[in-house]
Amino acid sequence: MHYYLLKLYITGNTPKSQRAIANLIEICNTQLEDQYELKIIDVLEEPELAEMERILVTPTLIKQLPQPIQRIIGDLSNADTVLLGLDLIPEKRDNNRKES
Image 1 (cartoon, one colour):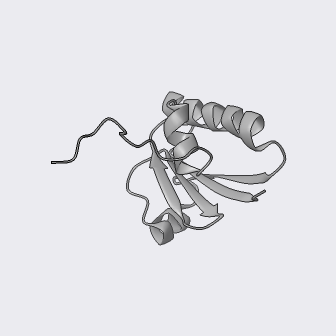
Image 2 (cartoon, rainbow, N blue to C red):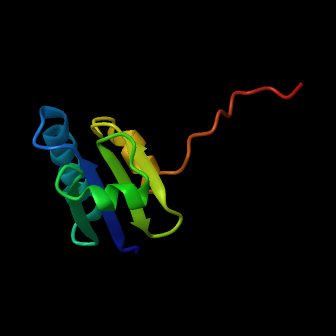
């Protein structure tokens, strides 16, 4: 089992920010149970943190732990993409591809 350290960068109390928070909390509660710490950082309130992490777009989720560090951009509404980024599901491979 892994412990997850997640940082979600948002910009203010916008509908997109609120969607990202709600989507991430739902995923964490169903998939990670009590094995995570979530920090929500508003770039308007803490611009220096956003600058240190080189956040150019929000919402941005950074998975700090476990390594490797992953970034997911958007409102996190595609649960499969978030789970893949958190390394909770293996990367899908195209098994139907024919070799030339």
